[in-house]
Length: 447
Image (cartoon, rainbow, N blue to C red; front, side, top):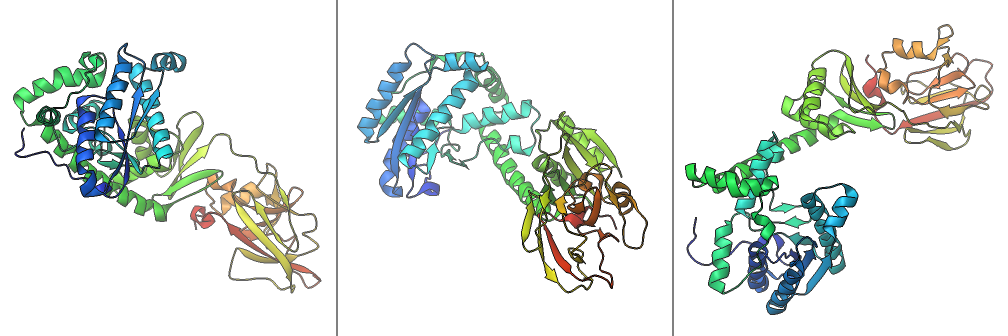
């Protein structure tokens, strides 16, 4: 694949920005530095370059000196860091490639902050994109994986994805520029190099335009993946919530399965495998059920929603009720109390007027084993039985706020008050209680 005329990548996405160039000294990054230097006046760019010596090869120090000289010639401020990747890989029990990448990006992001740069320019090109798509395909990736690398992703900028590696090398030869060769690129001891050295050359014998086709596949996947992300975000904005005890997704009616699978990944507190996503999707298709996720969380399907629940729920200490102010129950709700006429409140389940004498010494807390409750017009019973009768989803029962004295619930906030605290003709003082949950409590009440 060859282009007529000089290479002129479009840098308009970063016009007027401060750019940190990740400069290894190889042909790709040298071409990137030269192209950005040429485009600097047209796009109003402020450039810096950074090199990270990984300490893997004996001649790596020479790479750093080459990059320093190149930057001096291009009038680009140069920064350099050294990392002992082999030692760090041994200490962290990590592979050389993955540890080198981690330390390299760590240093580059530190340099970006120090220089006040807007982004880090990387020299990934079309051939790199083809390798990435193949690697993700080999792992069974969906559209997110097949989307490969993006031109702009967070603080990373990849302006050369539309160019072949051979084009960059030709550009440097025509410009009389040299570059450094990394001997480790010729070793097939990691998946990317093996694909580059063996698989892609064979594919290109059958499909000469394979790299361009893989790049088109990545772009198509990016477009479709972005659309699914938008649809998932729109769905979750109206169908999901969370509290300290659990998070959940409303699935009545269920969204398209592609959106559901993304929503499950987004809301689940654990990293999910393909098999786990399949299991959760199947769980959503049943009226009720419960499965283990990762030893720390489980998922539970109720009549209208899917919950993610920690196996060890948080401990929330009770808070004394303030008869003339506001108290908060960490992460769950606030209750404001104030003096009021001794008249029952109607219409809003989050506002109740209760007997002040009955509330003396009361606390705001969550339920405890053995709590008892005497709903209006009913006899005394276990609070747990009341919540079952009210069809409160089991994962949400622990998240309900309760105004209680001792082991007796006086107000299950949003659900009902007790005969023990109701306003009666003999009531002389009353408190108006206003409860505000931090989540949509009604979401879990199956009426």
